[in-house]
Length: 398
Image (tube, rainbow, N blue to C red; front, side, top):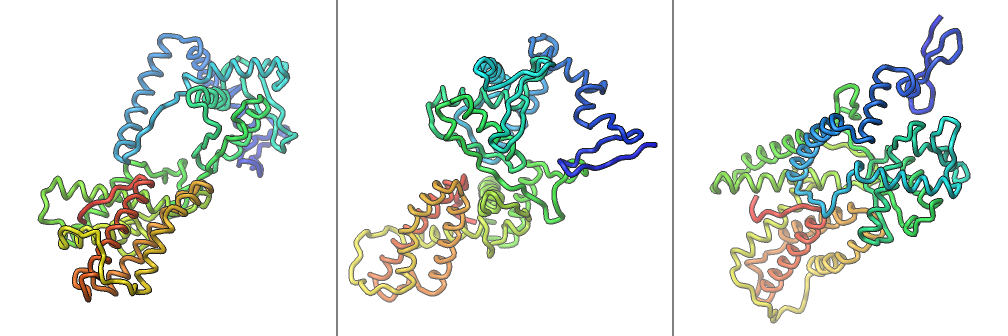
């Protein structure tokens, strides 16, 4: 008699025969399956620097790195330094050996090495397998040390999805037990997962969206919107495409960043390019509108005369501009870039309303005109600065 039973922990399945546990999925793979045995053998060969295994690994890794490079380039993302697990696991193993001698870790009869974190309301965590090979946390221990050695920083922020919350709790507590000088400065900026309008993305069901495909879809939506408006039709194809790329990337990045990091969110490509919604293109449009005004105005005078009775809306705009440094400070303090995204949106919204309610180029007098032009220019500068902090470029036309 056989039956399947689903546990309440991590949705793992346990196989029973005559009510006696025969295997648990992960344990079976690691200890009994042919594939698991082959994987363990290959890992041992890799760590012993077997030439054939290393050559195959290098080839497959390069495919991945090339793909990453393409995606990051399209996103406009660059890195000052890259750390590879293949270069950090040895340092992690050395640290574990030292920690074992200091009783930070303990060794089981099968020679695997563990750490007891139950006093921190966590669990027992393996840091080295019985065959001496490393696990994820082994590499993370080495990476943290290398970062500290390279930069001497007292604060490290890990931007990783909330599915890894427990892993980082274990890592940070382990570094404290090891007495690392930067251990109290480790912080996990835990991001909620991104869902589709059709529901949660699930790899087993094939509903996971490739980042490159998502970028292409958003850019295509931006292209359709631009063609419908027809405002950049007179530009060269290359110039039009450059603007469409900026609009598409603004739509993608802003729509995700505007949500507080820990919250789960739904990404809708069509909604992200809505020129009337809380979107990146909406903010860009305020900037573009100002650039158009400034081009028509010609050279600006920095001297404002005969304009001392400011309208309430003008005072509101000034107050919003002065709030920008504080918004940055709050974002930094809370590790929350959505603060800046929502500030930019509020500023853009205020300008759109101001533009609708007050004449700028045809103001009631020269003093009012010059003041409003300078106010508009300051608004454009702040919008550009804020969006740049979010990795978003501003087009001059759209």
